[in-house]
Length: 255
Image (cartoon, rainbow, N blue to C red; front, side):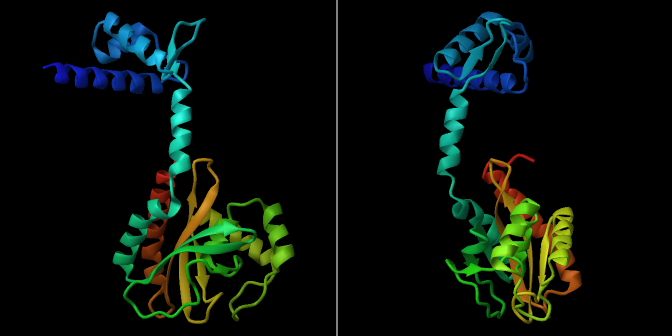
């Protein structure tokens, strides 16, 4: 019986926290009591305990309660402990099972992308990609989708440093055309590599955002151009975008 009461009190404390978190200006004891349908003395005891531990703060002027900075401290620890590769793997595996194609996870580093994870799929495909290897941004779907969320100034600095070298006959090598491509990518939410990096290989990618609301990485699906038809790409775009959003949410991104 004592254990049940202890769990019930913890549950009520969680309900108080949830109630307070929904109000930007905070809530008074009466407001909370009405929302939870419990007496004010019980609410006050819960608030006092939470306040002692820093989870709740009272505004001295209004008398209302709001979330305390303890939550910020704890959330910071959580965000620091989040590992992109670990959080992304379930989503990457789902894509691999759905498509049977090669799935990549990359991060941006000094004007290039670095492969963080590669799932081989079951279809036959030979690619240069390898975990730890770097790749250009301008001719890869993952690179383009990351660039589309950087400032134009940053993009131009990368182009000035790295150039837009031709990898295949399909590589975009003119700055104006490339900037237009990035605007299109950002608007549609995904990027394509139509044999721009490797002949005969088509890729589709989506961005991944972190808790700072900034683009942090990208994931892609890669296959032969024979398999990655326009019709199939139309189907896969929703899948890859959904996976990107799922990983972003795990990293603390709020849309």
